[in-house]
Length: 182
Image (tube, rainbow, N blue to C red):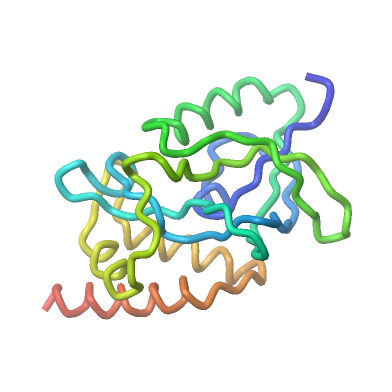
Protein backbone atom coordinates (compact mmCIF):
# COMPACT_ATOMS: atom_id res chain seq x y z
CA UNK A 1 0.00 0.00 0.00
CA UNK A 2 1.34 3.41 -0.92
CA UNK A 3 -1.12 5.67 0.89
CA UNK A 4 -1.13 5.80 4.68
CA UNK A 5 -3.88 3.80 6.38
CA UNK A 6 -5.73 5.67 9.10
CA UNK A 7 -8.11 4.05 11.60
CA UNK A 8 -10.72 5.95 13.63
CA UNK A 9 -10.88 4.80 17.26
CA UNK A 10 -13.76 5.84 19.49
CA UNK A 11 -13.76 3.03 22.11
CA UNK A 12 -11.20 0.36 22.88
CA UNK A 13 -9.19 1.10 19.74
CA UNK A 14 -8.12 4.33 21.46
CA UNK A 15 -6.40 2.49 24.31
CA UNK A 16 -5.83 -0.97 22.82
CA UNK A 17 -5.40 -0.69 19.04
CA UNK A 18 -3.65 -4.04 18.65
CA UNK A 19 -1.51 -2.89 15.74
CA UNK A 20 1.64 -0.80 15.22
CA UNK A 21 0.69 2.89 15.33
CA UNK A 22 2.97 5.43 13.66
CA UNK A 23 0.94 8.50 14.59
CA UNK A 24 -2.05 9.31 16.77
CA UNK A 25 -4.20 12.43 16.38
CA UNK A 26 -7.47 13.64 17.87
CA UNK A 27 -10.16 13.64 15.21
CA UNK A 28 -13.84 14.29 14.70
CA UNK A 29 -16.20 12.13 12.67
CA UNK A 30 -19.32 13.98 11.58
CA UNK A 31 -22.71 12.30 11.20
CA UNK A 32 -22.16 9.56 13.80
CA UNK A 33 -22.62 9.39 17.56
CA UNK A 34 -20.79 7.12 20.02
CA UNK A 35 -23.09 5.07 22.28
CA UNK A 36 -23.49 1.71 23.97
CA UNK A 37 -25.82 0.50 21.23
CA UNK A 38 -24.35 -2.95 20.54
CA UNK A 39 -24.86 -6.15 22.51
CA UNK A 40 -21.49 -7.80 23.14
CA UNK A 41 -21.66 -11.58 22.97
CA UNK A 42 -17.95 -12.22 22.42
CA UNK A 43 -15.54 -9.65 23.85
CA UNK A 44 -17.40 -8.09 26.83
CA UNK A 45 -20.29 -10.50 27.36
CA UNK A 46 -21.64 -13.87 26.27
CA UNK A 47 -24.65 -15.10 24.35
CA UNK A 48 -26.20 -16.11 27.68
CA UNK A 49 -25.37 -12.79 29.39
CA UNK A 50 -24.57 -10.11 26.83
CA UNK A 51 -22.65 -6.99 27.70
CA UNK A 52 -22.66 -3.68 25.87
CA UNK A 53 -19.95 -2.12 23.74
CA UNK A 54 -19.64 1.21 22.05
CA UNK A 55 -20.58 1.61 18.43
CA UNK A 56 -21.04 4.48 16.05
CA UNK A 57 -24.69 5.08 15.28
CA UNK A 58 -25.38 7.15 12.17
CA UNK A 59 -27.11 10.37 13.24
CA UNK A 60 -27.40 13.58 11.30
CA UNK A 61 -26.26 16.77 13.04
CA UNK A 62 -23.95 15.02 15.51
CA UNK A 63 -20.31 14.03 15.72
CA UNK A 64 -17.92 11.76 17.58
CA UNK A 65 -14.49 12.78 18.81
CA UNK A 66 -11.86 10.07 19.03
CA UNK A 67 -8.36 9.13 17.97
CA UNK A 68 -7.22 8.77 14.39
CA UNK A 69 -4.41 6.25 14.27
CA UNK A 70 -2.00 5.96 11.36
CA UNK A 71 -0.86 2.40 10.82
CA UNK A 72 2.93 2.03 10.74
CA UNK A 73 4.36 1.82 7.24
CA UNK A 74 4.64 -1.77 6.06
CA UNK A 75 2.10 -3.02 8.61
CA UNK A 76 -1.08 -2.02 6.75
CA UNK A 77 -2.16 -5.50 5.59
CA UNK A 78 -1.44 -7.09 8.96
CA UNK A 79 -3.30 -4.30 10.80
CA UNK A 80 -6.37 -4.54 8.56
CA UNK A 81 -6.46 -8.34 8.88
CA UNK A 82 -6.23 -8.03 12.66
CA UNK A 83 -8.93 -5.36 12.83
CA UNK A 84 -11.30 -7.33 10.62
CA UNK A 85 -10.90 -10.43 12.78
CA UNK A 86 -11.47 -8.36 15.94
CA UNK A 87 -14.18 -5.95 14.84
CA UNK A 88 -16.15 -8.03 12.34
CA UNK A 89 -16.38 -11.14 14.53
CA UNK A 90 -20.20 -11.17 14.37
CA UNK A 91 -20.87 -8.82 11.45
CA UNK A 92 -22.56 -6.30 13.75
CA UNK A 93 -20.06 -3.69 12.66
CA UNK A 94 -19.67 -2.53 9.09
CA UNK A 95 -16.25 -1.40 7.89
CA UNK A 96 -16.36 1.96 6.14
CA UNK A 97 -13.75 4.45 5.02
CA UNK A 98 -15.01 7.83 6.19
CA UNK A 99 -13.61 11.37 6.23
CA UNK A 100 -12.38 12.37 9.68
CA UNK A 101 -11.36 15.92 10.54
CA UNK A 102 -8.05 16.10 12.40
CA UNK A 103 -7.29 18.56 15.18
CA UNK A 104 -5.47 20.86 12.73
CA UNK A 105 -8.48 21.08 10.39
CA UNK A 106 -7.12 18.70 7.75
CA UNK A 107 -9.18 15.68 6.73
CA UNK A 108 -8.08 12.07 6.28
CA UNK A 109 -10.03 9.04 5.11
CA UNK A 110 -10.06 6.55 7.98
CA UNK A 111 -11.15 2.95 8.32
CA UNK A 112 -14.10 3.16 10.70
CA UNK A 113 -16.32 0.50 12.25
CA UNK A 114 -19.98 1.54 12.49
CA UNK A 115 -22.99 -0.41 13.72
CA UNK A 116 -25.24 -2.25 11.29
CA UNK A 117 -28.66 -1.02 12.42
CA UNK A 118 -30.28 -4.14 10.96
CA UNK A 119 -28.11 -6.55 12.96
CA UNK A 120 -29.61 -8.44 15.89
CA UNK A 121 -26.91 -7.05 18.21
CA UNK A 122 -28.04 -3.46 17.61
CA UNK A 123 -29.77 -2.12 20.72
CA UNK A 124 -30.10 1.63 20.45
CA UNK A 125 -32.27 3.49 22.91
CA UNK A 126 -31.53 1.66 26.17
CA UNK A 127 -31.92 3.99 29.15
CA UNK A 128 -28.66 4.90 30.91
CA UNK A 129 -29.62 3.13 34.18
CA UNK A 130 -30.29 -0.07 32.19
CA UNK A 131 -26.96 0.29 30.39
CA UNK A 132 -25.18 0.68 33.73
CA UNK A 133 -26.78 -2.47 35.16
CA UNK A 134 -25.91 -4.54 32.09
CA UNK A 135 -22.31 -3.26 31.94
CA UNK A 136 -21.76 -3.85 35.67
CA UNK A 137 -22.59 -7.56 35.35
CA UNK A 138 -21.05 -8.62 32.01
CA UNK A 139 -17.81 -10.49 31.32
CA UNK A 140 -16.56 -11.74 27.95
CA UNK A 141 -13.53 -13.14 26.19
CA UNK A 142 -11.54 -9.87 26.38
CA UNK A 143 -12.44 -9.10 29.99
CA UNK A 144 -15.08 -7.41 32.07
CA UNK A 145 -17.53 -4.90 30.65
CA UNK A 146 -16.79 -2.43 33.50
CA UNK A 147 -13.05 -2.49 32.63
CA UNK A 148 -13.92 -1.69 29.00
CA UNK A 149 -15.96 1.31 30.13
CA UNK A 150 -13.39 2.52 32.70
CA UNK A 151 -10.47 2.23 30.29
CA UNK A 152 -12.34 4.12 27.59
CA UNK A 153 -13.40 6.93 29.93
CA UNK A 154 -9.92 7.21 31.46
CA UNK A 155 -8.20 7.38 28.09
CA UNK A 156 -10.70 9.94 26.80
CA UNK A 157 -10.01 12.11 29.85
CA UNK A 158 -6.24 11.81 29.30
CA UNK A 159 -6.54 13.18 25.78
CA UNK A 160 -9.16 15.81 26.61
CA UNK A 161 -12.28 14.26 25.09
CA UNK A 162 -15.43 14.71 27.15
CA UNK A 163 -18.52 12.50 27.01
CA UNK A 164 -20.96 13.23 29.87
CA UNK A 165 -22.99 10.05 29.29
CA UNK A 166 -19.91 7.84 29.54
CA UNK A 167 -18.75 9.71 32.63
CA UNK A 168 -22.16 9.15 34.26
CA UNK A 169 -22.09 5.47 33.28
CA UNK A 170 -18.62 5.01 34.79
CA UNK A 171 -19.72 6.53 38.10
CA UNK A 172 -22.93 4.48 38.20
CA UNK A 173 -21.23 1.20 37.25
CA UNK A 174 -18.67 1.75 40.02
CA UNK A 175 -21.53 2.22 42.49
CA UNK A 176 -23.28 -0.95 41.31
CA UNK A 177 -20.06 -2.99 41.42
CA UNK A 178 -19.24 -1.70 44.92
CA UNK A 179 -22.73 -2.56 46.18
CA UNK A 180 -22.64 -6.09 44.78
CA UNK A 181 -19.13 -6.70 46.21
CA UNK A 182 -20.36 -6.14 49.79
